[in-house]
View 1 (cartoon, rainbow, N blue to C red):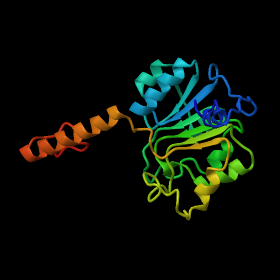
View 2 (spheres, one colour):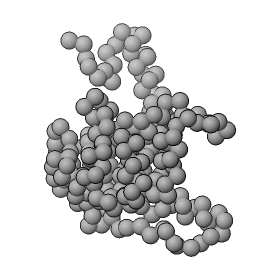
View 3 (cartoon, rainbow, N blue to C red):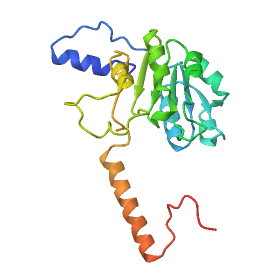
Length: 219
């Protein structure tokens, strides 16, 4: 929503008492198509939000989520999803098979007026290829909470340093790009759950109990 409605630009202007609407026009989501790459728990939650706005839902994953099907989602090939979607949101893990899932070819498949959102893992997008497409004036907006070379940058104050990352430096200059520092998860509730889960795992381990959070149980 912040990308679509140019919220950051509007907020910056109003601080200078500039209340013009030039360059702030967004688009209604109702009736448009949301393409969701990865329909696990987070992708499902995003699908519910998009469905609430009256969007058509396209999904891509290794398996279909019944809850997403109940929302009216249609599972299609990745290429079809990219070509037809007005809004594309990534919710897949970063694995060797998903590294640069959105590469140069995938970006060229997308609509020129699409909105691309990645709050999953930075390595899912070939950032250099994305910059090349943005230089051509493509895409209504791009929202990135992650960056493939974020190690050593995110979670630190580098404002007084010369950061040797030309790709990121160019990326943040585009007016239709919003970059945040891997903060999508960062709420008081989520951090509290992380602390509680970590403490429970330690207590289970020291007591010799099987943790409820084991991903691969021992055989």
